[in-house]
Amino acid sequence: MTTIHADTPGLAARGSPRDRVRPAFGDAELVHGEPERFTVLFDRHAAALHRYCARRVGPDLADDLVSQTYLTAFATRHRYDRTRADALPWLYGICTNMLRRHRRTEARAYKTLAKTGVDPLGAHDTTDRSLDRVEAQGMSRRLADAMASLKANQRDVLLLFAVAELTYPEIAAALRIPEGTVRSRLSRARAHLRKRLDRSTP
Image 1 (spheres, rainbow, N blue to C red):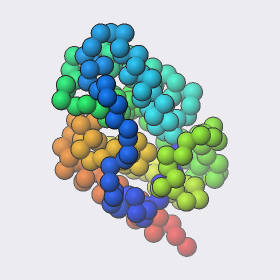
Image 2 (image 1 turned 90 degrees about the vertical axis):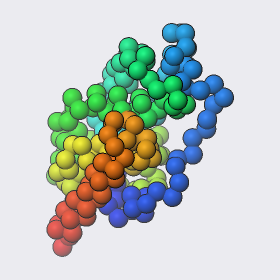
Image 3 (image 1 turned 30 degrees about the vertical axis):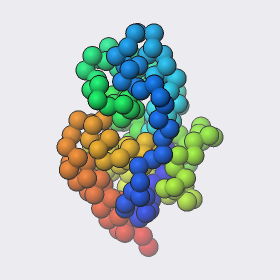
Image 4 (image 1 turned 120 degrees about the vertical axis):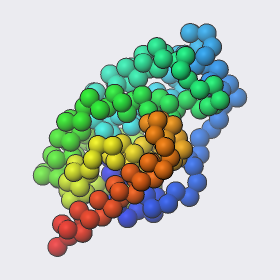
């Protein structure tokens, strides 16, 4: 379960793209190379994809989703843009499409947290520190309620930004939408969270 604060500086303006080590052997070469090379792509990015899925729908479903993501990626590798050295945004896009089949699971988790104060997904996560920059004390029940009420496409953009730490251009590439749409959805998501939180603040 993602912990996001509506007024966190990280959501207001990203200082710089995430610091990711770029290997000498590019992802594009792995995608379009010999089939056995695809296992290297799995080793390179599977952990990040699993953390993203686990934060949204729990670790059990995350296992299946990551597997499905790579099977789909392998089957559609001929569509991959060779000019993109980093395949992770592409994989996040496939993964996000897979997650759409589990909207109800994600929404139920947010609603459970909002109602009980207990995160049904976060309890399983003992290693993920990717959200340290956007969470100080954990997701509040009010914020969980606000997240549950977000439009699905806005939540996708918000979580790709805050959890996956993709840049605007990378989110646009992942979801196959214009960068301006990414900015618009993210802005609306932040505004919606602030409005819901202001309304519920005593």
